[in-house]
Image 1 (cartoon, one colour):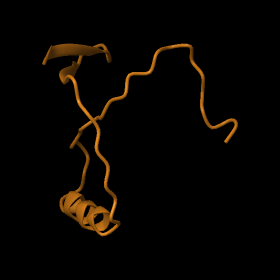
Image 2 (cartoon, one colour):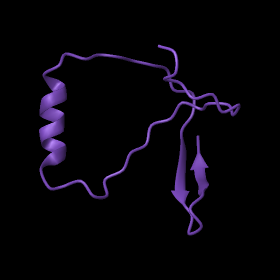
Image 3 (cartoon, one colour):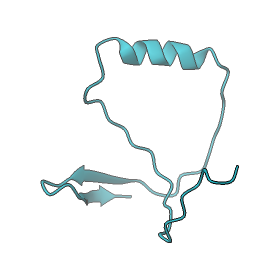
Length: 66
């Protein structure tokens, strides 16, 4: 679909963001129930994991990885 992807010239690093701030009580349970009923299944190989922390200036710093 032309126009949906923004080309920035930067390399893309696939990632997953896990956050829990600002999620109302019970919303995660409701979301998990919803998605478990969709029958979605996927898998992928992971060759490394890095934990990042937000800096006070708004950037990110790697805390460590494997």
